Length: 280
Ligand SMILES: [Zn+2]
Image (cartoon, rainbow, N blue to C red; front, side, top):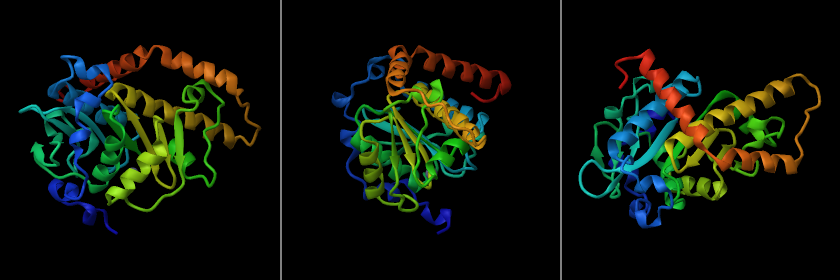
């Protein structure tokens, strides 16, 4: 089915969705960012636009498909919105102002345009299931997607980039086609469980995190881990797999202090600002 037939207005796309009020209910939110004065609509817009542009610069996007979303306080009132790229915009064209926002009543309240229905179905399924998640990134980046397309996918623990994600990922082998129904988002959320990364069989990769910078850093390093795996496998030589105990140690080291994730994101923001003065 042609992709354009999957597009409907945001209102239509979300008409049958479950009430997302609970998703935006901050009484359930566990992440400190929501208590920070910096967690406001403008800052989330700027960070999400940075993520779109940064992922494009890294070559991890695909045409005008794939999608990144983040939850932010609404511009007006006390509600919250899910920000997303309007369908048809190229990732290199995204600015904070061009992002559109849906409120907890599933209504377009910020910006003009329409959303890809598959974005809504996939991302809202995750938000419904995970109150700790404030950002979802879904890409078809080449190496990680290649791993996801294997009959028996596995993320080989052969590099510290892989070991960082030890026990933090899941594989979905139940691909059902384009995600156009709530059930598919809910199904993907069940497969993801409490993990951070979902390798979506025959499809791509999804990352769920409490901040934009963590999701961004994660999706970049998942791709790097898979790149080493694919290239090492291409030699035909036996892989040197890191023992489980050491993988566990490495993963704990990476997650003991996540400042590097923010530093990475800030560096990307500077890179984009320096390369395109009109970007933001
Ligand atoms: Zn996709």
